[in-house]
Length: 117
Image (cartoon, rainbow, N blue to C red; front, side, top):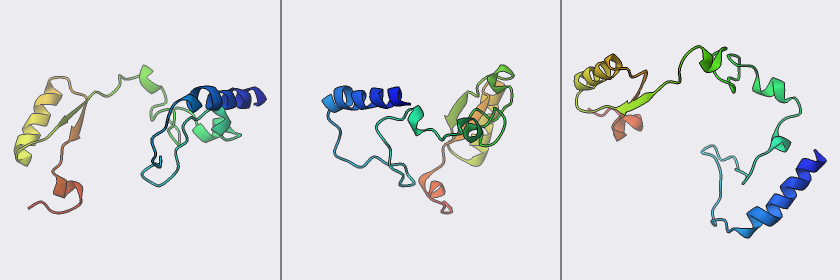
């Protein structure tokens, strides 16, 4: 851990310190601050328990026990337009032609939780 700390301090001083950082607060949408660099020093003491195993909570290592040895990565197509029926027809077309996942492009009122009608 001491060597890691020394490497991080050197990086902070010699590499990160040479550049300029935008003058803004870096945080997640939940308001958690975001550091410029994360390393093993930021991990909890019991990392194995914290990240779990593949297919087990908290799913850090994937939702499938065999990870992607048992199935390919999901390829997503972002689509949606016109009426619900037209979008449904488009999704069915995409799935029939090899698409493995779909993401719907909603209109802004729907995204904000309002009835768009």
